[in-house]
Length: 298
Image 1: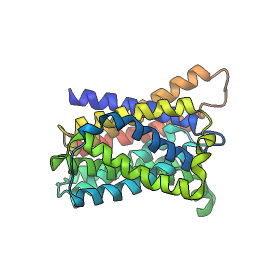
Image 2: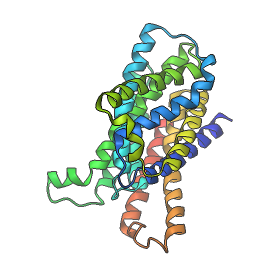
Image 3: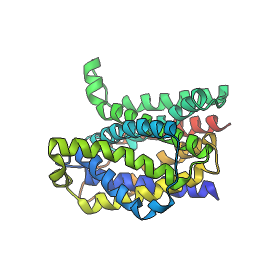
């Protein structure tokens, strides 16, 4: 039951990513997107404020630290989505490196054990990310870095999502409720963004830099629902089960949705689909990701 709920969570999150892809194109500003993401998702949980419980000072400090990391990571994610050269299927292997980060953080911070097979699986995930970078040949190191700026940004976002997952698991393990976990995460993400927005005066004009507010708000609603479902799953399943399953399924769902969109928009955008060689490279990378995730679950 909870694995099915996790599958629904993954599909909901990916759908929100595709909406964000369209909402963040053109003249969008990463800070404005991150700021309004915090505002909208915080407003969505205000009706549930009566369900929020207390947490300790240490838990508050950890939540504030992870929230700051998450805010920076979210801005990097919007920058990557705003790059017209990038497609979600190319960024997917880099996003799945978050599962490697989760396992490493779980070992060193939560004192969980990691087997040799899981180490090998994590290595496969990293190699798949490197494989995707080869679809854009580079004549020099500077050209390589330029061609893969979006990938580097996604790696930062992957680390931030890993920190959130580990924090949620830590809080839930210590008896903190689902609503409390999410409320304080949203609060500590929003407050510094509001302070920066007010100080710079950008809060009054931030919404202007979001080309499609309707799609953006819809994505925030879906992302909030996915967050609560994910917390419900984490309350009953360990990270060593959740992360391999999520990482193994997500890349194929991304590629499937991307191909469906290309098929529907093919006549209007004949150059939208990647070249056959690039497509094969991505499939190979995603297969390596899946194999790595299976090994990490063994």
